[in-house]
Length: 177
Image (cartoon, rainbow, N blue to C red):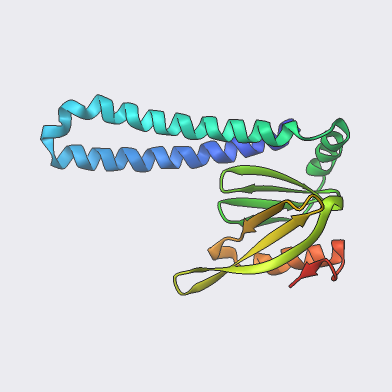
């Protein structure tokens, strides 16, 4: 379980580092062209640090809450399967790991564990972003909970491979494609 959380936190922190660089460049340009704001520079930098720290704290809390719902057997299976080779595909702001007993997904700053045996059905849907149709998967669990995972606009072909894997693993009757 430690490797999954470590990988999640490293990816999320690298995202926040990029955000911090972008905000620092914006602050530098703002301060460069508006010298009157130079006296507010410490507050601006403190605000950037606060935004990044709150985002990182949110990621830590979401990872902790995702792992708290797992049993010891689930944790053992996840550790074993995550270190073995398995297909990994890009999704919106993350990736999806397709393993024997679980689907592990880092999506929009969330860490999701989806047990294969609890999936009732998977629906293939589309979102419109501008003129493009972006596919996403909607997992309906046996508890009537639904989990939506959007695919990356730059890697929308990965959805075909994920749905093919799901149809093979769950059966074509549970995957509407």
